[in-house]
Image (cartoon, rainbow, N blue to C red; front, side, top):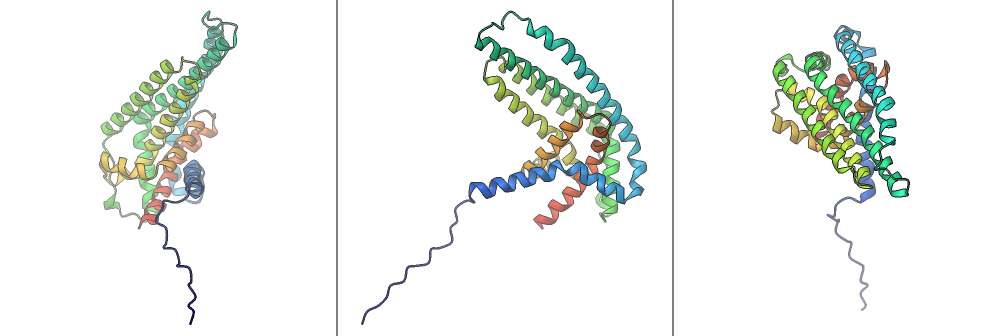
Length: 269
């Protein structure tokens, strides 16, 4: 009597997910964050009771953005032509490469300074208005009023100042390191990452602060959703450079962030 041996069924693999599906998941979450201002705008169009809470932050955001754009234009007109005549940039290819890297880093530094200025100004002028807009959005979504509380204004100013110092310090360090050819491109990438993270976190923490979460708890929650925050930060970074439409969508970003936060909490429960 012969017996037929059948191959054993392999046990389910406990290996980490493959790189491609993981990458797709990260990109999808980044795009969710990137679209946050548009989703906030769509929600506002359906709920006109929120419109009175939008007007003040919109006007303030518009004034800040116009001032930042004027400063960036002044830098582009005067500083870049002046750097072109520096004697350290020789006529050979290494000198030209160093010049391109330095000008690129100058542009990145100016953009970082613009972001830092926006964060400082918004922390002082816009923090309370954004928080109240987010609070009224939470109430429309059915959040019990007793679960929500507004952070004191002094904490909003401190957070804005801290974000300003982080971006300014990173920008200064990257500018110094970026004077080395080739390294300048890497320094620019690091600078963009920090800008997007700080900008995105500034919006992402609004619904967390409304629930009274402490800074360590907010940081731990934010790290679990890093791609979402980077997407929010990237959209806010770009919107700071777009006249008129940019300030409008920056004002809808707190609403979109509340919607995103609700969706993330539902996914984890």
